[in-house]
Length: 394
Ligand code: PLP
Image 1 (cartoon, rainbow, N blue to C red):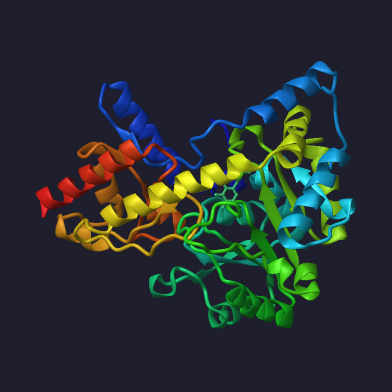
Image 2 (cartoon, rainbow, N blue to C red):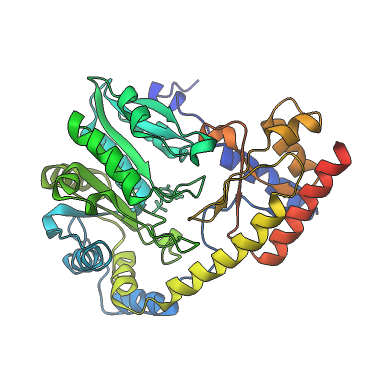
């Protein structure tokens, strides 16, 4: 029998993958399952990005790049920060990573010693706690309450800080809730971090997907002190519909970026060269596709949200960004005779043929997550199915 390392035995399997596997199985048996589990935009990568990547290969750019990424790409990323946030980053303060996910992974690896604490607001993106634990760190949770739009308050942040606290993660817009922190809210959280010398990890991967006239603010743009205190994580996956290209980046303190680069040099060597060339085009080329995608998501959100909250026992804070809805369905689960929302979600899949992700995987067991990165037709059908399922079983 193979003895695996303790660190992987302790990993929590992804609930997302379990549901997706079950949905696939039902589909292969001929069932008409609608999957609302997707974590990626349902648009193609813009053609000019693909063309640039192909051209780079034909021109012979098929070798290693510097571990922190191509200088030309870092230049475009720096220009993007300047244009969108008014932030100045030197190339030595930027590392290109194999997706935002690997940027975060590398960051935790270089920051955390055994027992160091990272404050993670609930509901959280599933990988944060696992990545912190893989680096020997300890996740400390602060619960963003439904009545506060699932966001944490400065008081909650203060109360979570101990002498082992190294960092706090802010993910705005949030996966799974779609909520956005305002500039004032970020300022208040930032003040707490400055007072206690807690690093801020700002995951801004959904930056470009904001709705209802809301504006994304990066905590790093609020003052030079906050910029110093913050590592921004971002990437092209969601903004340019490039999830499979695996290009993300981190920007912040030079020492941290240098350590991350050193670690990357021994793990990935560099993010895929071709994907880096495509990403240069993503930032240097036309951006109109971003607006089109954003508008399509907002249109779907507005239509689906209104129908979703009419389902008996569903309540939902209206998302301001990303492409997820995160209704609280505890009442609906109880009224239809289910022990918990996990079982309710399982029945939605097996009986209503709609695949949603149970909130338990995000630390929020009363909710389910629905992605609207699928066609409006399917979304409407899925919500109708859920509605009938609840009414029939009440
Ligand atoms: N951060 C959040 C909050 C996400 O939802 C995701 C993707 O689902 C990522 C980071 C990772 O992005 P990437 O595909 O660039 O690794």
